[in-house]
Image: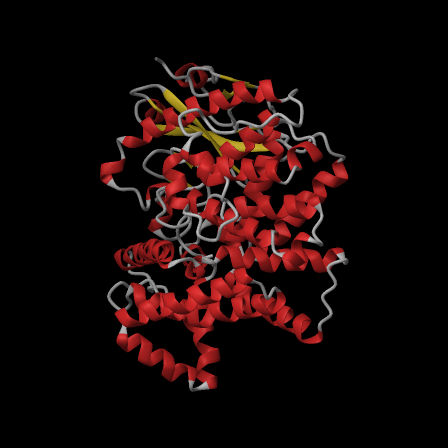
Length: 505
């Protein structure tokens, strides 16, 4: 069967070099058109005038690039915000090059493995077939009565995966198993299920096809080559957010609008994460660092990418324009709160509210702040999971750290804190992270929501830290010594952990 990838019928904004047509490459474009079709990439490129000049026009509503392989003539639509990029299978070339040679490397290939290269087309084919079946079922469901169940899973996975979704509120939920049962589509299935479970699809009259398309695009915009910052992490954070939304104080106070924002923010909070941290982007003169002026670079990009997909799919086109813009703004406020370099700022504010006992969840701004803190907890809750799950996440995030450090060594850059595999171990990285970032945050969350779940999380945190300490006696000793010196304890997070920007978050 021949697969046809859908390409936007858009005018190109630059002539196509001859050398691009003879090898794997890419063509950048920009347009405000929203029509879609499926032209052959060769025909598309040959339709250009031979000496056409780049058009000068107002800022387009959509920007991006099409990449193709001349050997199989398939093409892929790359959704990008900001300046137009030229992208290919082996790398992308910024229009405004920085001074460092590493800028020519495609982040999507950073963590890829040679043995997995052949499985990518097959995975895309399976997901395409899966999406087509969902589109068919969605059309049938749009007019279904409310009492009819929403069969949101493919028939191939509706057995065990459906049983797991019945326990989606359990803190022991195994997102790795669920991802395998859903054929790598855990983020789509879990988020759709939660939106339906809270009655948000019917309440906000969301179009089933648009919603499914939005979730598929969100999942595909995560780099699954990243060991940690991938769609499974986003699904795990969304599941944790669901657990917090069910806590008594929140369940009794949050509106449906708050819950919608919380779930969407959790699902998109690391959208298009490159697998490296903010300091890395800054010191390599990456275009995102320049675009956001070295401030919350990744978080701003995640937010803008999410807004781009919301507008591309027109998910909230049925809502008044003011409501749609409010969703976009508040979504950004939630995602920006996950910037771990601002951890102390949010934690101090949270602690002050708790000390003065002045949090009023009847106040919309206070509810929003609690949602920010809930998302921050969900984002770094891995050390609070059962050991079998927590250990896997610790290994994955440290692998991503060390891979960045290897690249920094290769290009003779200063190695970022925690990224030197010769000076750090998984145990030492995790002990420091738990001590200086996770424990202070979850201790305050337990003050706010003193429930069985909070005590369970703190219990797992203590056991997991003890397990890592047993593997790293020296790290355990230095940690205890640091805790006995208040001055040193306050400096350590900023110098080693918080300086990582939003790497682990």
